[in-house]
Length: 225
Length: 183
Image 1 (cartoon, chains in turn orange, red):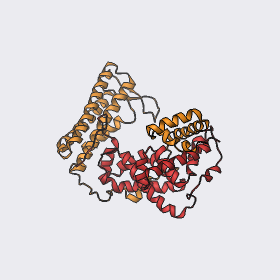
Image 2 (image 1 turned 60 degrees about the vertical axis):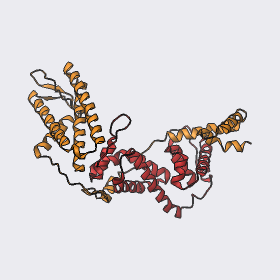
Image 3 (image 1 turned 135 degrees about the vertical axis):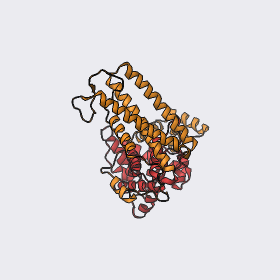
Image 4 (image 1 turned 180 degrees about the horizontal axis):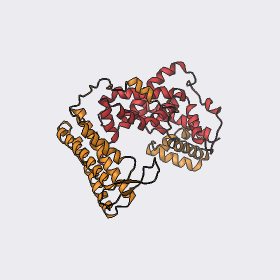
C-alpha cells in the first residue's frame, strides 16, 4: 500500500510538488501499479471537469431580474443617471435607424455603381424568399442615409471627445481605423466583383459595425457629460 | 470619467462598453450582459449549490451586479468581475443554506448510491450529478479549482481556509469522483 504517495497524486497532477518530492514520486510510480492507476483516474476526472459545458436555466430569468432592478428607466444604486447633453434630432435618429435597418438582416447592399437596371440582392436568412430587387435610386438614398448617420455620430463624438479620457478616445479611434480599413478593403472587393453577394454582405456587415461602434461611442459621450 | 481599456489585441471588450452604458441606467445594455453571461453564472450556481437553488441565486447575482456596476472600473474583463461577484453571492447563500442542510456534513457515502454511466451519452450529466453528491467542502473546492480554474490560494481566501485544506479537499473530491467514474 502506498498511501503516502496516493495522497500526493493531486499535487503531482497539478505540478505543485516540490522538485525533490516530484522526483521521488516519479520513481515510486515506476514500481507501483496502484498509484499509476489512481493517477490515470484522477487525470480523467480533471479532464472531464474541464470539459463540462455550461447550460442555460429552463426558463428565462430576465423578467424577474428586470422587475427587481426596475429596468424601465432606473439607474443602479449609487449611480447618478447622467443627464444627456447630446440629443439627436428626429431626422438624425431617422437617418441612423434607416441606415441600421438597411445594414441589418444580412441583406446585401450593392454600393458599387452598377448597371442601369434593378440590382438583385440576397434576402435575409430569416426570410428566405425570392431575391428582392432594389432600384438604383433607392440604393443611392440608402447610401446617403448611412453617410448622414455616420457623419452625425462622428460629429457628436468629435464634439464630446473631451469628456472621455484619452485611453478611451485612443481605443475608439483605433477601432474606427480598423473598421474603416476593412470597409475600404471591402469596397474595393465589391468594385472588382459587384455581383458577388458574399462580398456585398460582408461590406454591409462591416459598415453596420462602424455604425454600431459610433452609436456606442455617442452613448459614452452622453453618459460622460 | 469613463475608461475603456483595450485587450491584448488592442480592441475594446464589448462587455465593458455595455457595462458602462448599464452603469448609467441602460437596462438594454444590462440585458445584453445578462444574456452573454447567463449560462456561465447559472452553471456556477448550480454546481456550487444545487439545481433547486440555482435560479434564485442566479437572479440574485445579476441584481447584485446591477447594484454594483458603479464599482466596475474595467481593470479586468467584465466576465471576470461578474464571476467573482457571483461567487461572493453564492458563498453568502451557502452560509444561509448550510444552517439547514445536513447532507453536507461529511463522507463520500452519497456517491456510492449513484449508478455509473461511464462511456454513455449521459456521462457528462453523470459527472454533474456526481459533483452534486460530493460533501460540501470538497464540492466547493473541486468546482472552483477544476471547473472554474481558480488557484488554491484564491480558493483559500474565498472560503476562509488554509491553502493546504483546499488541496486536501480537492484531492478528496477527485478520489471520490474517480471511484465513481471508474465503476
